[in-house]
Image (cartoon, rainbow, N blue to C red; front, side, top):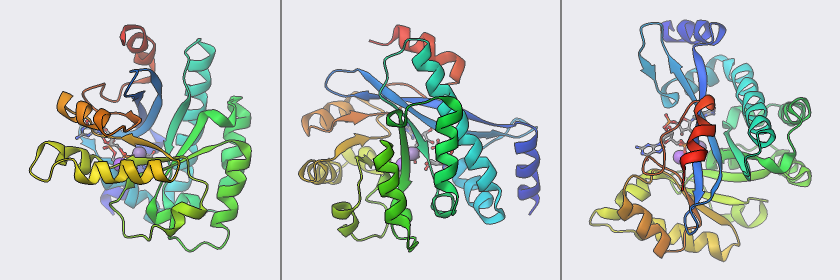
Amino acid sequence: AMLMQHLHKAFDAERLYLMYQPQIELATRRVVGFEALLRWRTDEGKMISPTEFIPLAEHSGLIISLGAWVLRTSCFTMRQLLDDGHKLDRIGVNVSAIQFRQPDFMKLVESALRDSGLDPHYLELEITESVTMSGAADFEETLDKMKSLGIQIAIDDFGTGFSSLSYLDKLPVDRLKIDRAFVNQIDSQGGPRIAELITQLGKKLGLKVIAEGIETQAHYDALLRMHCDEGQGFLIARPMMENAIGAWLGEWK
Ligand code: G
Ligand code: G
Ligand code: MN
Ligand code: NA
């Protein structure tokens, strides 16, 4: 409860902010986009992970206004990057199941796009498998509507949830994100097995596959060998502030 009060105050005091992590095409090293990642630094300077405060925000309902702010800010940032002349395909925005289930979520997305002037094709929503299981009757309808606008959909943390795979066949998904736990396994005894299976599954279904948590050249090389399309991780770049993106893009090769 204490943490909850701090979270509300933090949002009001703009202690919550976004950082952006580059995503690249592995074969060409071209930067395809950025994932927006929420950060909370307390007054005392302590960093609190979204894995800790997102559940709190969901519980209290704060996720609605917080999520709206994340979506709008990400759209405005992307629009600015494009206006600055950067050639990028998309901005990835994390959306929690509770957020997705809000009756006016679609309206929220539309107004963020309209107000920022961002073409919907540049927006990718990262949803988790739990969204697909949320049981909302109009879930598929919402996804179809998003698709018809041109919005892209990625399944985040793929393979870590407990969902059936049947949704992959019927839902209009564009991309699978290999969870960093599976990328991390690549140099251990288990080898690249799960990452490779997910990549092959994605290919079979005609989906793009992106790996997160690429930390070593060995990860990169192994993923490239298995024909994983894209990746992000500390080897490429840590999440950065918006005002650092231009310089980073200028130096990246
Ligand atoms: O960046 P980091 O590893 O701390 O993120 C931890 C988790 O928090 C990730 O699973 C990520 O999807 C989630 N997360 C980060 N930013 C947001 C956000 O803006 N909204 C939601 N719902 N989740 C986020
Ligand atoms: O939404 P998702 O769960 O995919 O969030 C990705 C999280 O992983 C972010 O919190 C980001 O800061 C973190 N992250 C990004 N790259 C790396 C990496 O190479 N290693 C580790 N350990 N974490 C990473
Ligand atoms: Mn994500
Ligand atoms: Na993830």
